[in-house]
Image 1 (cartoon, helix red, strand yellow):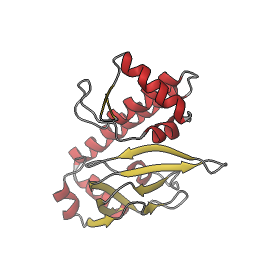
Image 2 (cartoon, helix red, strand yellow):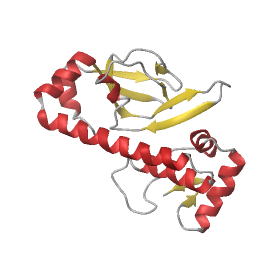
Image 3 (cartoon, helix red, strand yellow):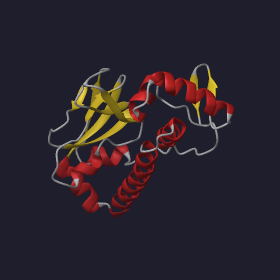
Image 4 (tube, helix red, strand yellow):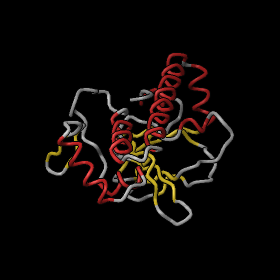
Length: 198
């Protein structure tokens, strides 16, 4: 949990429920709220000029959604869409800023979280520039695992389908399937009931 629920509620956060595929905010809209996931998952995506979906992240319980944009005067570069039945805490931007001003440790925790995300994003972007599918896929899977507290091997169930991994890495689905089988043979990941574990 990035920020304690009680603290968010004490600053006026409201609980909202979203149905699957509900658009929480759209690309080019103005950030007005801090969102933190209580349950469910939220997909951050973008559509390229040909209308092809690029999934940038799938966020789960305890994580915040594009909070970094509350510190700058920019529009959202992505869409946030409920991936499944999802419940969030929603706090207006001005109250979020006040919460951070009045709670030094929480402010430091947010800074650390943002730094970790930025670091992992750099690594993923570097990997996505590779011509090798295995390097791209490892980068995408490691980025997803970076949101988990448990870093031990095969402890993290990747919350993505092969199609979604293809969308994240800009690879063909067939290439993803073939490369995942290769990575399993190399002991980088495990497949259990069609689910990928790293």
